[in-house]
Length: 219
Image 1 (tube, one colour):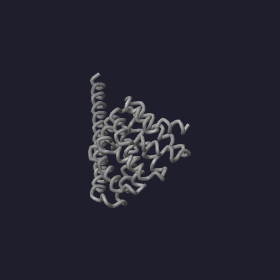
Image 2: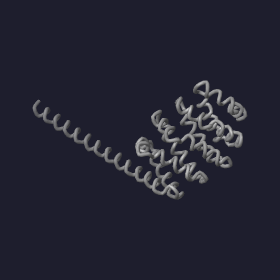
Image 3: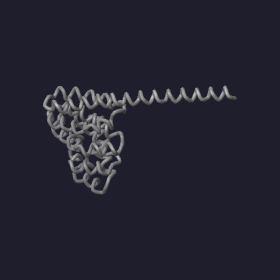
Image 4: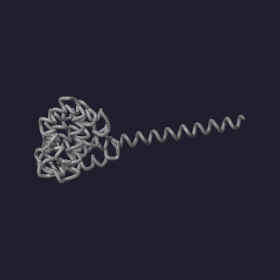
């Protein structure tokens, strides 16, 4: 019994040590990832006027957070504010707008806290501005509509933010400009539906801006 007890204690000690090593390794990876994300964010801030730096950094950031990790770290390090800055400074650069919209959608999809952070950072207005600046580019419109649909999903504050930023008007225009782009139409209709699921004011916004008609026309 004594030998068995010692063996059990030894096994428990080994398991505890293995768990500690795993925990330390995870913490180390998280710290390393946080440092990498912060490095890209700082590079974007320090080179706000250089489109190539913004685009390459957005590609890297999007690839990192696409795996589902590092998203809240990106939010904590001011990454959303930096993305919005890139969108504002390089409003005429379609690739930056598309990549930024993809990153914003990925962050917003995590949960309400991230949706709130997206709204607070001014991402909704930046997406609307991108849509208004590039009506002739369905790729930009599709990414922006998708991001807006994710932001507005089951979040009253976000839905109100879309109304305030005239997002419904921008989405409706995109649907009417590109009625044969199935992916764009799908994402635009979803965005309008998510807004309409909100308050009475949200529903009326769709009526007054022609959103209801645009949805019917897309059927």
